[in-house]
Amino acid sequence: MKHNSVRSAHPIDPVVRDRVMAELEAIELKHDVRVLYACESGSRGWGFASPDSDYDVRFLYVHPLDWYLQVEPQRDVIEKPIDDELDVSGWELRKALQLLHRSNPTLLEWLDSPVVYREDHEQASQLREIARAFFSPLRGRYHYLSMGKKNFRGYLQGDLVRYKKYLYVLRPLLAVQWIDAGKGMPPMRFADLVAGTVDNAGLLAEIDELLEIKMNAGEAELGPRRPAIHSFIETTLAEAEQFADYKRPEGDVVMLDRFLQSAIRP
Image: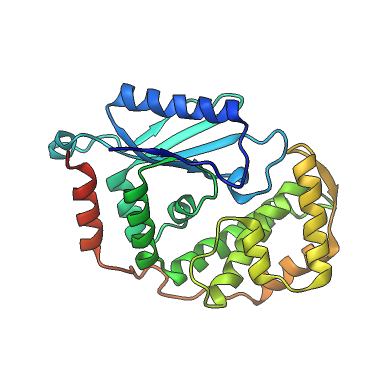
């Protein structure tokens, strides 16, 4: 089946893109799999990469049919050793669909990544449609609120903070606000998330300044607290509530079964 290489609005160094494509082809040959989809999952997908940010390549793949007819469960993750530039790992499709049945926010973000290296266009489009049917606002909200709380406690308690950590708290908390506003799945691009949730001029100015610093400085850049951002985070965390029943599944699993069967058939 034909795969398409996709160039996005978020530029990737052509040399790096070629290297990623070569890595994916090597993985297919070594593991006898077919890569259906490959994207950026980290700061380059979110849209606020530093000059020295790694490339976090994530992909979904299928095995030949016989792999699915074995008695004993097989390994369902492919991970390459991380080098100084590329972090490459993937999930087998059945594992990914099991996670989609549980409205896994990480997988939903992958499918919304603005940086797509390669995809089977027909199957990727179907998968995005299915993802919308399985999105759970309760699960997504729980995930992002928990992430925001954890990152705030872990990274933003001192007078000097790593600027990128602000973004690792802001992004999930803005995703909570997006969900609470009834807008559905939060977008992966940070700029879209901000545009749909922030209208306070002072907060916007600090976010813009923070992004400018982050995208032109190293990953470890330190600086003083940003008062408007810090106040927003503290207020949001104080007011946000955890809702019960967030584990309730969404969608009809038969949709996932049919998609898996169509993807692995020769």
